[in-house]
Image (cartoon, rainbow over all chains, first blue to last red; front, side, top):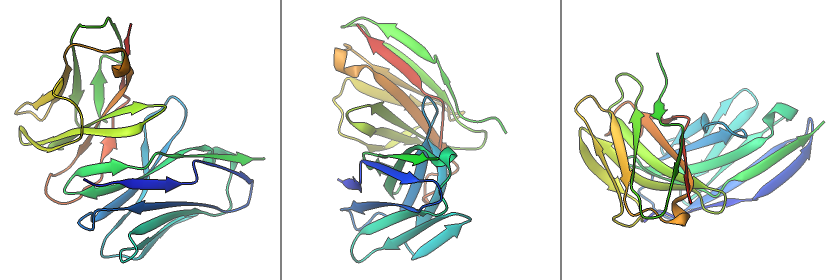
Length: 110
Length: 114
């Protein structure tokens, strides 16, 4: 089955800096890669996603890149703000069988 | 549109008992997936239902089962509860089951097994 690895497990940045979280996956049939943000005590919220026929996608301060050949994808957050502090999960999806990475706890220090 | 709802929100059970959790998807969504979230194991995929059929299954023992009704509402059942089953159980719904459509999560049911 699919195996998703996510790094780093914790990330601390200064407000205004950029943050990058990386994931690798094992199943070449996976074709959809969402990213979720989970604040303490809340449900995971979809923040951006990318499909296998696209290499990069941007939404304001957030961008995701996908390298299908290398089977890795990354989340980039620019101009980080304290409210970006949360746990971020990547996932790889094959026909609605979705497997998650272990999560990255991002702390943005004011 | 109302979001994904789950009931109950909190549950305390003792070892050996069984439990049933319920998930109501966003109106029009036909696929429901279930996940177990624990601090040590992250988000683990349990199973996915579409049109009342289980299409995908994660690596959980047979004590974990589920079903989906004709109105797309889904239930999951855990029999013979163990201490290690204590977790947040999340369901997520998506529009269709064929293409990789976005999944939206419910608030979860926090199960504590004593």
